[in-house]
Length: 94
Image 1: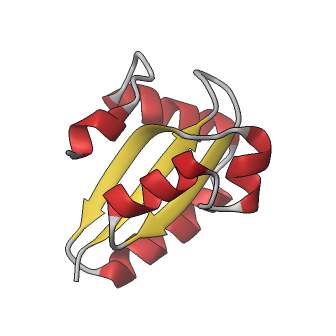
Image 2: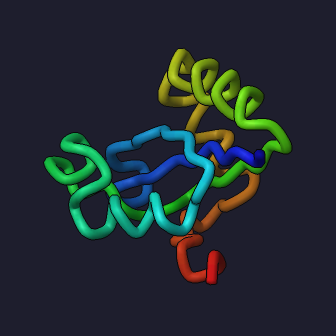
Image 3: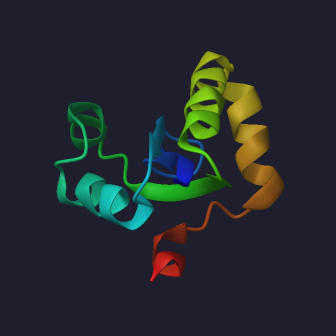
């Protein structure tokens, strides 16, 4: 089963949230509705700025665990490498 690691942002260079899921569209929709997590609801973190797809959920979980240990600057550089304008990638999921 495929897995996805994603990073949400409140705005460019704003609050970041890193997560993992097997159903990306459904999970991001939940975050946007305020039901994804208490953290994303509290800090209004709903802009999808990075997605990484893995063939195995276990690999996605390993990557998420690794990313959560990264410092903020490293995460920002990772985002800007593939999404320099911090565009919301949610529309691309449909």
